[in-house]
Length: 403
Ligand SMILES: [Zn+2]
Image (tube, rainbow, N blue to C red; front, side, top):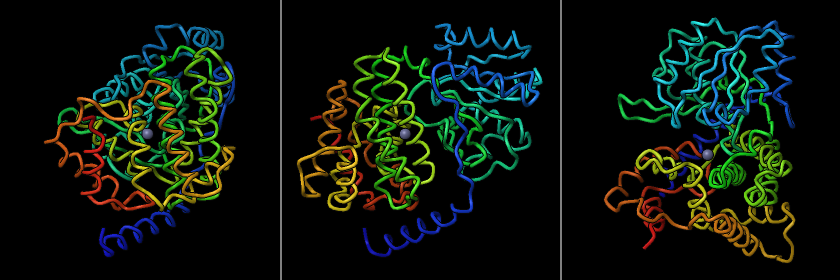
């Protein structure tokens, strides 16, 4: 990339970084541990809330995982309205249907129980409830939501997206065949409930790919240029927790400790990237998700080691710090430590049956379009260690195809 384009991007990123000190990024308050969800009942009582709205993943509902909670709500005279029709990749229609239920039943607060899709939809339902004059399409982009949301509680049932801590929500506009981000600090939930019981029935494939999504959040935040002391600390801690617990929770799905640690890692990675951004791994994965509906975590898992390799010497120091922090021993040289960590990520993927390239997904004739999308997402916004231009991204897509 030429020097002027580089200078422009780095100046832009610096301004965004400094400007962000004026935004309140304090994440949600936490309720942690087994059955932590029951603590919300005391919270509702203390705030005189007697009518709540519950968007919930239909798998969680059908498995009976919230039956006990619903019983406690009834016993405490708290009425609820369930909303179980949110699809993966939620649409504006899902949001508007949910909003109607919320308003028709005079709900006062939202507790979203599910993966990223349910939590994202719940965030936008809340935003629409308190900003009825702003349509979902008008919320697109940065800082378009004016009024504070109703009390929003997020209960993640996967350990990966970090949606319970972030200021972002992704929505699909079906009419225009378009998927986009809504970003506003007002979308950060007030509370997050990290209850590992919800993860015990998560299938292996979802455990591995959502876990690799969390790892990508932590690594991209850490190697980027927009860290604070807090984001560095959270990112490193998340990486260590994921290295120590992801494969274990994949192999021992009903072990509560591994699940609990992964939940914490996902949360910490979410806090880190909300302030310090993600990078090219995400932009390259998002373009694949938009074009071929490739699952987000799965795409990130495959792309992460390849982009890290592309960054070369720009990340040797940071990757060596990861090596040391995680507790790997024996190597002295930064380059060797960096290569070791990249190989470790590759092995982690293959130990959970995630391939190292995409077979039969990326079409040669689409690479130009994919690269344009990915470049537009990352440049000039993402404070990546090495700025990539469209040609670099094209070459990465080519190298991701299994020959
Ligand atoms: Zn992600």
